[in-house]
Length: 269
Picture 1: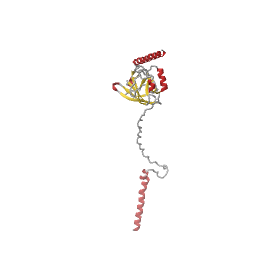
Picture 2 (picture 1 turned 90 degrees about the vertical axis):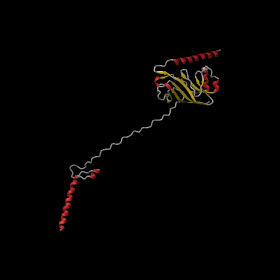
Picture 3 (picture 1 turned 135 degrees about the horizontal axis):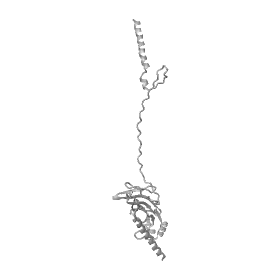
Picture 4 (picture 1 turned 30 degrees about the horizontal axis):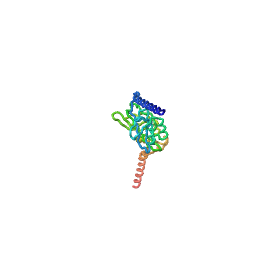
């Protein structure tokens, strides 16, 4: 009798939570927000085990749902259920029960957690232009362990607009253009998120302007003003152009040479 009452009580609680989830889903979104159709799916492989979602209400009244690869599952309650890998025999013994405590005890002793239960995405800012979100988890499960990575998120918008994105190490969703970026964080999923590989932009080397040629340095005199020696010159200009004093001395030398030559001729006569 007590066991029967416990089952009835658990069923009533489950139905109440189910109805509460539906009622909350029907509430209008806050100002500036819009409702979003949320789903999740698993990809990858499971060897010797099956994948289940809990707590998630199945059509037969149970609170644990067996998951199929690459098929969407849509939670109606206020969270995305945890995902576990468990042996098929253990699952068969409890899959139709509504006793959540019994399910938790089974999962704690015979299952491996793949994805942790987190709050479900209900609303997004209207400016994001998103009306559907599907998170995809890649799972590699065996009897010994369950390894999970966040594969991608599929986005849908008005007029058939679609896109695919991922998340960074903080859980921030990286939606592609033209979707906006103010989307709910994925939360603590129970495994380490990996940083997507980003291609850095090519380095831009600034172009150096051509050097401006400096004007030629004018020749300067190193002689004192009161000295009788001619000023010294440096550079090619000083070598190629004679000084004014040298120019004045050359005619006088030619004159002395000419007078001496004339005197020799007269002495021969």
